Image 1 (spheres, one colour):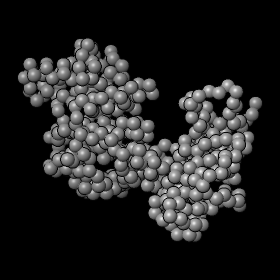
Image 2 (cartoon, rainbow, N blue to C red; image 1 turned 135 degrees about the vertical axis):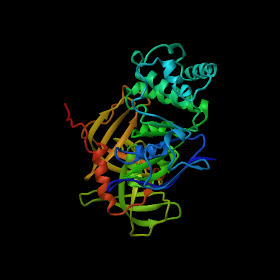
Image 3 (cartoon, rainbow, N blue to C red; image 1 turned 135 degrees about the horizontal axis):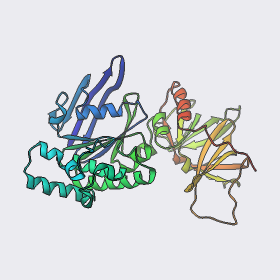
Image 4 (cartoon, one colour; image 1 turned 180 degrees about the vertical axis):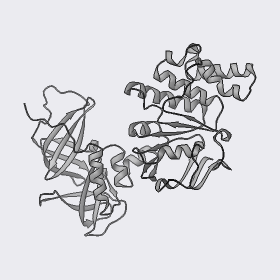
Length: 392
């Protein structure tokens, strides 16, 4: 059953179109995320669902009821903002109880429901404290309790963890998932953080320039990006462009330029059978690539290319290698599964072999105009801004 249905929803601010013809259904009980860069329209979309903005076009349904022009206080929707918006002059108990008192709920019921909410967010022993006496994570919990106490049908969360440090964000993500599972209502979550959206969502929508460019389960979007934008924005990727030289039953052969007048051949599985001579784009995730000083044993389903290490970044859980193949740069993630003291890792400027399975690439539809966007995304995602160091 659907809780939120967006039908051709658009929002204009003067001549600027912030949201452009969005169609989307969010299911009852789902934890759904809008993900995208600043200015992509995700917060404007959330504000229209909340009633703080009215669409220029289209309609918004809450279940079977149209709420497009309905006042915010009449909607079965509550919002948690980035700054929490707690009343500084009220203790935590009174902050949580505020909505029920406005509705003139009986005192005994208020007491029971406030204690129930404080217990849900593990703050029952802090009820008499004031907002300035608790941490950011605790303020977030109180904001959630205050929003949930009115028993909304949908809870909207606008970048709720942006003000917290990394460790606390990770902890609060788990807490949010536990709270969602406990109350069972629909959560709609807005963030620009890919890791947050990937870890917390049942489904998510990737937004760019006011439009949804792809929606679905996080693993589906990550493994099978529908566009260059999706591939770059969800995690890291390597783009390989090549000319199809042969099409077989379950794989195709490509000839790929390295930017220096040379070519390397690879095989790839495919989704839509291209024609010989057609140019296609493949996305290859960095963790799918293995790296070795030694040339791997040739196998029918393994691709390999030779390159030179240009940069190395140690990132704790893994090392990131930037390997130049001609003018192309491959980003490779090598997981630290175990430390071998007698086995030296590849070093700066060494020649290495990269190899991956032919099923680890994903074919992406693209137009020639998308190539410029890919170059811009390269810069935005830091693909070319590596720490430049030389051998000591």
